[in-house]
Image 1 (cartoon, rainbow, N blue to C red):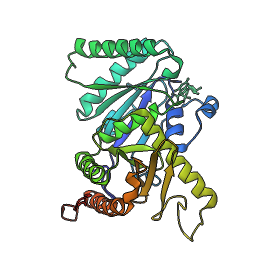
Image 2 (cartoon, rainbow, N blue to C red; image 1 turned 180 degrees about the vertical axis):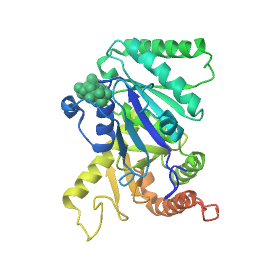
Image 3 (tube, rainbow, N blue to C red; image 1 turned 180 degrees about the horizontal axis):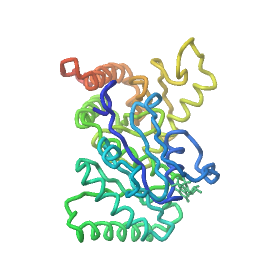
Length: 332
Ligand code: GDP
C-alpha cells in the first residue's frame, strides 16, 4: 500500500523529452522552488531517482529520465523500472512541436504496458500558460486524438491515458499531481466518505486533506472542486507554514517545527468566508472553507474533527479493526 509504513511504495515516474519541464515540475511541487527560478535549471542528463519519503506523506519516487531514453540500451532495465511503478507521467511541451513527443509517448506506453499492465498513464500537456484559452483546448483535443489513434493502430486501444493541462506558473500542476496521486490511494473512497460526513455535520462548505509539504490534496469531499477554492487553501498552507517558521519555537529534536500536533489556524476573509486549518498527522492537514456564521459552532466542529481525525488514523492503520466514527450534528 502507498501509505503504509514499511510496505512497498509504488513509484510515480516522470518522463518526457528533454526540456519538456520535468525537473521544473519536480522542483516546484516538491521543493518549493518558485517557477521563475526554473529558468536557470540545468538540463537533466542522468537518471535521477528521487525519494521524498521522509518529508511527505505521499511516499513515492520520481524518476527523472534524460530527454532521450534509449529502450534498446541494455542498461535500461524496463522490468525493474516499470514493474514496481504505480503511475507514469509523460510530460509534453505544448509550446513546442509535439510530434516527436507523441512518438516517444507511444513507445513508452506500449513498452511499459507490456511489462506492467496495471500502470496508470497520465499525460501532462505542459507549459499551457503560454497558450490562448481556445488554443489550449484545441491542443488538448489534438494530442488526445493522436495519442489514442496511435494506440488503436497498434492494437493497444484498451490502454487508458488520462490528460491534464498543466503549468508551473499556476496551481494546475498541483491539481494534476493530486489527481495522479489519488488514483494510487486504495483508501480513497473511505477518505472521501469521512470528509463527506465531516463537512455535512459541521456546516462546512468544502474540505481538502492536504499533504502539507507538496500541497497535493490526497482527498476531498464529493462536492465539485473549483480551482479558486483549491488555490485559496494552498495559499493558506503557505501562510501558516511561513508564519510558523518565522515565529514558531523549535523544541529539541522536532524535525519540522513549522508543522506539528498543535498546528491550527483560522483566517477570516472580509467576504464572510473562513479558512480553517487543522493538523491531522505529521504529514497531513485538513483545510476547510466555511461561512463565518458556521464558525460560531466551533465546539461542534472541534468534536467532529476529533472523530474525523480518529477515523483517518484507523484508515491508515490496517492492523487495527475498523469501527465507525460517530459524528455529532447540530440537533444531537
Ligand atoms: P527537463 O529537461 O524536462 O527537466 O526540463 P526543465 O525542467 O529543465 O525545463 C525546461 C525549460 O522549460 C525551463 O526553462 C523551464 O523554466 C521551462 N518550463 C518548465 N515548466 C514550464 C511551464 O509550465 N511554463 C513555461 N512557460 N515554462 C516552463
